[in-house]
Length: 361
Image (cartoon, rainbow, N blue to C red; front, side, top):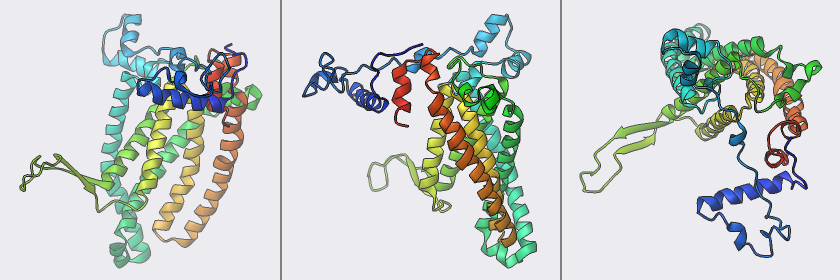
């Protein structure tokens, strides 16, 4: 239990943290001494005088790496020992995406996904081309090649979202954080940050992380063209060796999708680093399940199948109402707000740190 007497409001701590981060970056750790009107004077209880908690990273348990695993069990490096480490041992460094072991596996998974996409996307687009040819004829196909290409991309998305939705429901449907009779949402924070990271959770997060990184890389590949050139132009002007330009295949929603992918990857990686994988898995499931009818609706719309588009749209609205407008705000989000106090009333996290990021809610 880490309770602070007269703990200041969370939003105020958040503001102090932002100011402190900026000032420390500019080598001004004593910035409070320069504030007017006693704002930084602790003796006068100045508004900005409150001390900040230690970093939460100091409270996070160290996850054993593959090297630690080998040393603990007196194993040698081999395929069988790595298999035991990766697929049979819970709470390893693979469960934290910011560790070197997890980064290597994440890179490997991204490369595998990219290989799979290069192989299946043309085939999926060929399926779309065949269906469009049957429905609308060859002339329509020639004049709607972009829609045929997008059909292949969204068929891939549909298969991924369907697969991870089924896997997520299979692995996590019986977990206590989904069961109100066993504590429900309170299990997000009970024993935090020392909650075990099960093998299923580890690989669920690794695959989700790899997919989101690949999606961001694919967006940038579609949007930019990079070419090498001489550092000195023929005119004698100095120029950068790498020339980056907008690609003809750049789509109109690049800005929105770039922001979406960057924020998504930050959330995925940070939630893993902060040991918030239970909450992360719940958010993943809600979004993946609701993305399935979205993908179906997109596929039907690309092919201009009006009846199918209408049916898929109605299904999408129903699923979104249940998941993103029901479960997400009224179970997951409310559960976070109502139960986050557990991390400092029963756990080892400083109350100020918890309030810093939850007080604004």
